[in-house]
Image (cartoon, rainbow, N blue to C red; front, top):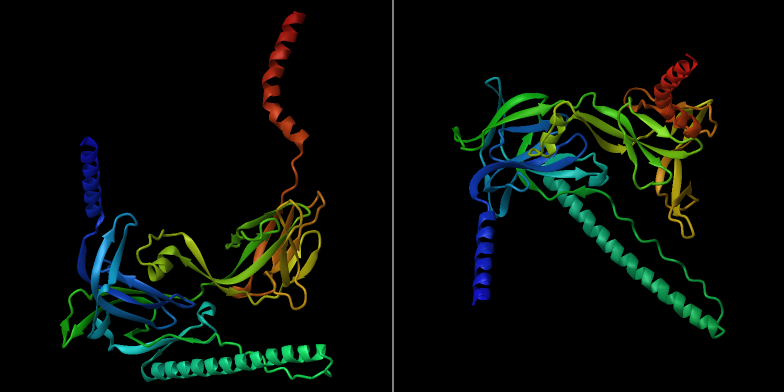
Length: 421
């Protein structure tokens, strides 16, 4: 009986705890959209209690107002929305003002994002209205055409393989050699991507601070007023690097700022990959792509965009040598030891790494070096290399004992002087 009562109490406490965890939901108007981050478009949403929407200048962004259910989750200290349970688009005229003057009045319009080389390669473009519908229709037609061509090419490939088997079997029976023409290769898919049309408000503004709100027939829609902060993208592009040590090529070390130094052992080789990046203060970038994340003022963040176009750098230790961009293959060493070996990729072999191979001299007298590019402006790159020479154990022991000798020597001298007296 006591065991049964204990089980019932445990079930009741578990049910109470589950009810306590269930968050309180409320209806609210949030801002959602696909915003320009300087390279590509990011999905985001702005909770109802956040009063400022942050954007970046240089490309237009697509935003919309949605009435949904919103709740706060204390474990992550973030606000979440349940768009599956409730989603109602709030439409009207988006009025954007600055210093009390109307800057723009925007109606909702269908849009798509065109990625000519795929979403991962950036360079996206927002298309609006009729241009958006035409671009999406053309993209769908291209995809259908590619699917038909691919199915036809696969059928031809199967026929070719069947003929090869039949010709091989006939050859084993003594038939003459039959020449079979190979079909065309399978068509390669295009990286081009066009997103499905959706309705939103087009926001394309110069850097500055604005106010915005939705209105219907001149009446403000409750819950839609927001402050709008548009950041400037000018002068942010820099060249950064990742240092790939030869013993752990899967864990590169970022070197983003010009005042960072690269430490290396004598006789070692490390691999340097260069990237184009945009430098932001955290308070300028994080509120754009992740409005609920805490940003620290004064702390820089470097957002890597693409591989640098530089194909050579100059490394200087005792003398200067030009280092070309190399295609490298990483292979695991044989035997019981666990390690990797980096070598040049062979012709037709897929490389694992494209980098500059920097060999550090083994001479004991080398303590400094540098890597420098020939580019100017955003393409300029320079890092100092510190060669960490092996420790001299005898010297280290002597230096460690020096304080002890300094304490013992006066005592010995005083005792010797006392004995003579």
